[in-house]
Image (cartoon, rainbow, N blue to C red; front, side, top):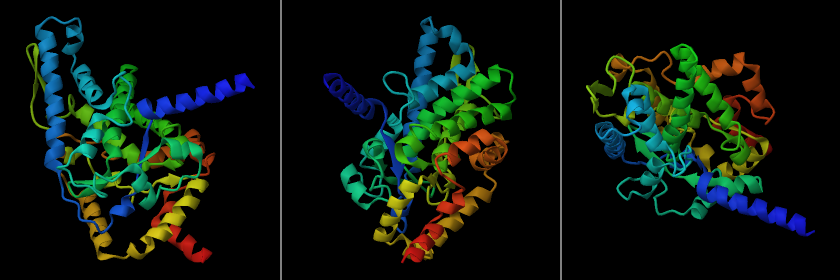
Length: 366
């Protein structure tokens, strides 16, 4: 009896510790921001990102100049890039952060408009969000609801900032690992994406929230691409001048944010229990009434334009794979292991979870 009580207490304390310090999985309801005009604050995001990058490079140059024990490793550009994304995306213990500094900065910054406004509490968000009602204790315990911001006309949840930096750090580490093993550039990218896919099927994805977010995977992917762009391409961000590293140009965050970060455009997969709870909120929030609104049609048209236009940035940073979506689709078809990871959680193709399809379920039920 005493032993059983002790075990339960230990598990409970572990959950408290995990939630507080390590795991606080965020989800975003992009439908909630439909027909809401959120100002584009890309300049503030750029300012934050470039300040952190330049500060890290300055510290590295000081370490080299002072003969630090780490100086030899700083002769390699990939190590500099890894240090940059590590500083952006890890916590106090050097672990990839689910709530990285970039995300926390955006959430607490009164200069950045969001929807709902940044003073809205998590409990208040739960009452209005698609993900408010949780189908299990586990999902309720680990889930926080994030707000929507605008960068370059793309609406996305602030959780994507942690995916860009924290999970981007993990992706880049796996990319470099695969390269050291002799894999090609594209095969190294595929390896990193595959590891991230498996991660989304685990405790920070399906297991904790009942959601498999393709938009999260895209933000992860773009964080890796930014790190690759530090040292590779026609005009990389980093240049070595003797024993000093120079940042050749500022990063424009808009070159990495794209419509696939928006979960109303790049649809997630859901467990059956999660879908059941979502249908309640879709009906309550009357999302089906917005399906044919002019605002939504204009946003969708703008997103398609962004994905098809030839961006000048890509001339200096050519992409064999510009977005993760097509790559993931091919991997799901060709890799039975990845296919089965979703199937065993009863998650199927993205089309099944489009708002139009969920609204038809509601109509049928009525």
